[in-house]
Image 1: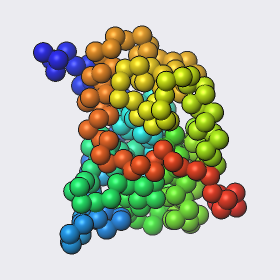
Image 2: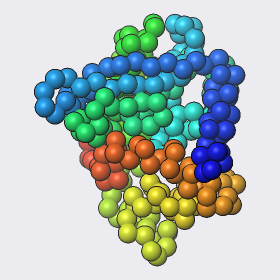
Image 3: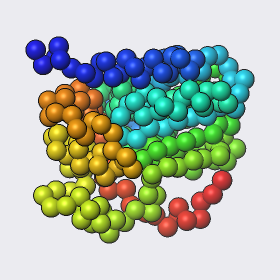
Length: 257
């Protein structure tokens, strides 16, 4: 009965409809796993699912990189319509989210932000008219870290300009302590809030992350629990423990495009 009451497929339908209305179509490419993977020998692969404007770019290409939690369609559903009038959009699911996956999660190391960036670079090379072409990138939350690594490794000739939103590239342990202080008592670590396993943690995350928390904070527990089970929990094994330990590095201060 629980599955029949799930609202996640309905919400996903509306998000996908926004993408289709903006002229984007879904696709997927299989590329070598950037960190090798394979564990016991042989090259592991990963599948990168994406939505993109049709054909080769006639407008400037723009790559949109989502954060962790929502899949790409949920993260960018409100932006793709206006942006599609000015850009050739490429909107991938990061490895471990939505339709993107590693071929063998047990044999491959969990993807770091650098690994995610390498997978996106391989995706760009595989798309029509995009191999070697310069692309603008916008990343939010964890996607901002991935956008930084893509720009850093690909270089200004391939990537730029870059927009990084809601990503603390110089985050320190003190920032984590401040985050937990704002969250209040009863939380054992930032990961307990940032990757919620319970409805109470989901509400706390939305309360802290959104300027105007969405109505979902008022939803009953069974709906939030359904969202966690369907949209978050299946992807936890793919997430690197370092995702919650991203700390600032001095070289970020001297990197620019």
